[in-house]
Image (cartoon, rainbow, N blue to C red):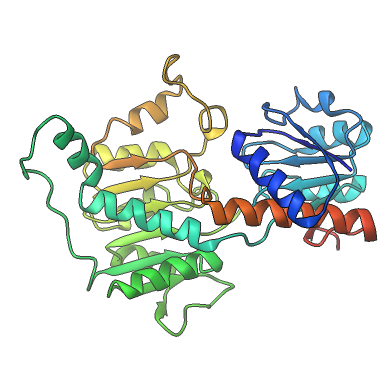
Length: 331
């Protein structure tokens, strides 16, 4: 089997090689560093199996190009699939398979890490100490114990995050129209009520038409001016210009982001010599109460191993039975 990987990085090479050996899979892996989009899709002609990541784009035009070139299986190295036009894939007969669960702990623990760093100003303290400044001015945080934590989206990752914060002694508020997996420890409330009450808000819902810019100017205005907002889900869940406006007006306490709506041309790349062309992101990075990481919530050994193993198992099952284990949009 030949599998072409777009948006690949060194950790993909090592994790997929290890998973292939573990599964006893003999395959020809082609690791490509470019994103999948309308310009690059023609390059993949002749690749029956293509494996993409979160910042690749598989819209109708891209899928038509892939199909014309012989692609019949599109593997996702992610749980989210908002970047794929499933309707078009189904029409063309291209199977799409994701990794519905790899390590919810990886992303949930990263969200907790962002929260702790922001609350206790760890990132700022680290910079100070390196300069020989051991003063404590401006580094006051708050106890998480006793605070109200709002979890928006209580799938596997949201549930894991909620249980971690419950362990800290926080009161968990939850909002999810589908999954009530936290009922034993959380109070489920309407979204606006959650935003008004929560001292900490963490986003763990998928990105779709109903959740695009879920956090906008109106909903930011509902939040406490001291609230901490964490997003390790998808960048499009937040209206970034509205968030910047709230930060400028001191209408929010702190923000931790592992995702950004226009991250595709920025994240996973070294721009230290060239600089950042995205003015919105550049402005966001100027705020001392904002901490941004480059979509690394999934980046643990355990998660990488699970992603590679599930992805290859999807390919194997498709090759053997004609239907990938985690096929999407097949009905």
